[in-house]
Length: 82
Image 1 (cartoon, one colour):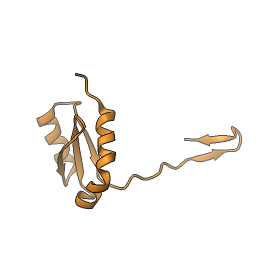
Image 2 (cartoon, one colour):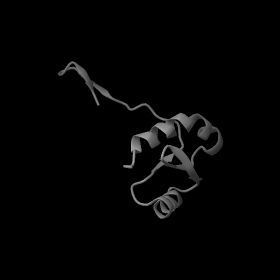
Image 3 (cartoon, helix red, strand yellow):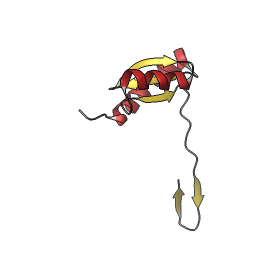
Image 4 (cartoon, helix red, strand yellow):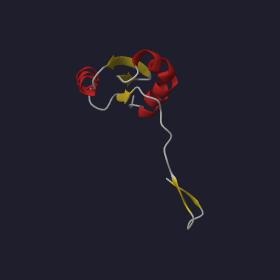
């Protein structure tokens, strides 16, 4: 079955409120829609994920509040620019 990165990211966002309470500032490894492990350092999370899950079969996300993406308004195009 092909890897579904979007499913892992959706699972991360769904669990983010609880992760913020318990692991804020740390790094979460998600694999197949499940939280696999949490680490204090990004390098440790990446090393674990590569060794345990294989290259390209996981996401590593920092556990922090999702910040709105800023954009500017272009008066020339009369629409928001990303």
